[in-house]
Length: 146
Image (cartoon, rainbow, N blue to C red; front, side):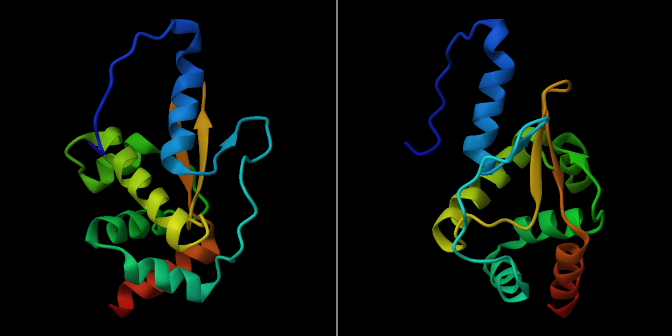
């Protein structure tokens, strides 16, 4: 079963690290506060052609997600904020599912590249995401062209 959920007791002192690891598994490369980014060197680059392919390959929910991030260029936003703006039924958990689905697609199609950056905020125990301005401009142009 692809989305089978397993419940497991976790000692409270490890909960933040478990959330962090789950975020890494679902969102791909993330940067932790005070540490270097954890990532593999991609073979491709996130140029306009790659962004076009990513956008065109995406279904409407992922396009809405990218456009939402593009409307706030260079701004770090929490998963809960993005989920609220997108009016996702399951809130930040729904967004985590979308990001995980994109991460799996990106791993197989785009050398793991994604048009945003993600960081784990351990003080709030929540992911933050930011789309660079130059990427946001391309995404907005692609959205208006379709």
